[in-house]
Image 1 (tube, rainbow, N blue to C red):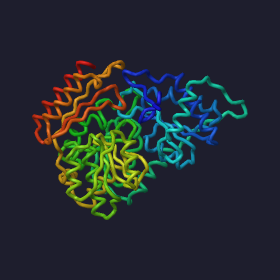
Image 2 (cartoon, rainbow, N blue to C red):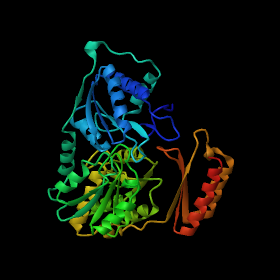
Image 3 (cartoon, helix red, strand yellow):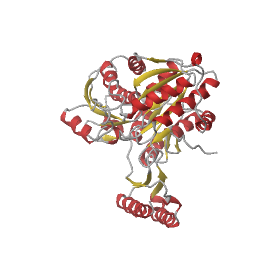
Image 4 (spheres, rainbow, N blue to C red):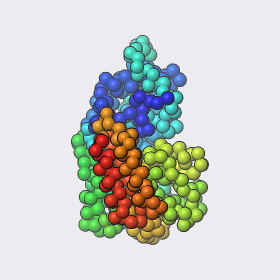
Length: 443
């Protein structure tokens, strides 16, 4: 049974797909509220990132939930992991995030958390989808929900992030923090500063339209220049909703999620705190797998998406995993990916070892990768075309045992991603371009 509305990361209205309208958000709020209320759950928190449509969708969701008899706590702009944490802290029955993560301001999406700060079970999502096909019916006046604003949400989350680490953990460090004009703009600089670092905040002036605009985890060029100009120890690039982290070392070189996972896992191993192995994804660099193997750390690959990384971690009772895109998970600290908390773990390793970020990452040698994204129309399915299948098969033969090719649809954008990897850089680029050209013909 497939879902019509819910994807692997909530409900998204992106370029090439129907946007989430106020009418849909209203009905979604009502449908979710009705399911929650029927299960005796009558308190839901709503948070959002800084994109301009968040105000509109927040109001519509709030109205729908209240019409179903559910009380609504409004958190304002907050990182996605903060909403997961606060849902549990405030003993709410569910949490809702209005965000499209690393996407441009004109996209938006809606994600749900359970009362435990984890993603909703499939059966709950199916129940909500069933109600989306029905007309809204409002509860009687005496049963209507109420709305209230939670003014100390940011402060509570800042204290939570700090509480995971010793005071003055970052004393003596100079850090450039890029908040992507997103949900961490008022949180990340405070956390790192209160842990002792000298912080240079950039891209922390959201206006509703500039979220992720040539900044943050997907655009680190400006951060790289500023880190070098300021002679900083490190640069941190979060994404629009704060669940991703990409770092920049003291030389202005980008350090991706695979390298950060390696640093965190190796440091945990040296401290005797590593629980089992590490989970990556099909997109994780082969260099990560090789480096972990050299440390006798087990490694498994999940499907792309932090949801699948989390699932495999729980199945194996492990703690550490992540994606090259910057989703980093350590269940010893928080039950979801968290860019701020993950960054502190890496920074703490720098302080405790006395090593720079470039030195810490040197234990892992990345294999060359080539990633090409092809935009696809809604009614086109190029991966089902015989000519494309033949091109992929020929690419696998050409790469042989010296590399690999991975073709997949993006879970958040109307894209086909073609990725090749291997020791021979010229070969993987040539193979990727040939396959991408064939996909483009039918996109």
